[in-house]
Image (cartoon, rainbow, N blue to C red; front, side, top):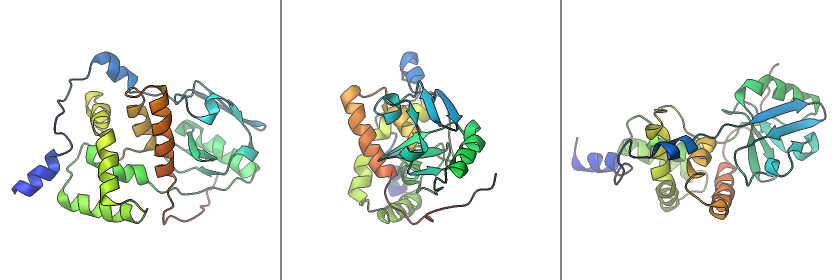
Length: 216
């Protein structure tokens, strides 16, 4: 391994020591989605973990509130205005019935946060990977400088989230993961600002098909 490869692989763990996070903080990194009840008249959210979310203020949403549903996302997500609301994967079938009943569009979302968070997976991150991801993210309008700034902001929290919790995720980290990781770091106002910016990134236009068909 040459020096440039070693430097690229080490840059994301620099200044961080594994298993140094206090147990209390580790526990705060987990953000259960609470309870979701899907009924013909609407979808009700109880104990949703992200306070800036609309469903923490308006706990029941109706079909008219929903722009589209990412039924194949992990977990499924509902778009309301300029934010995505998560629904536990165990309710995917019920959510699909709801979407079909109310003729809500189903979409495949771009996985912008998955690409941004790849350096923090439990897998090798090479200079070749770095260049490939930057090229894809450029298609979403993100410059190399912007990508670096975003990753630097979330770096320590994502390392804590994936390794100090012993999650060891090696396939994919996404929007839900970064919101869960950043929530303990920021105060209420700071997290509200991060939540807004995270949603803007998650909703960047991509090259994914505008709609998909799912069978019940």
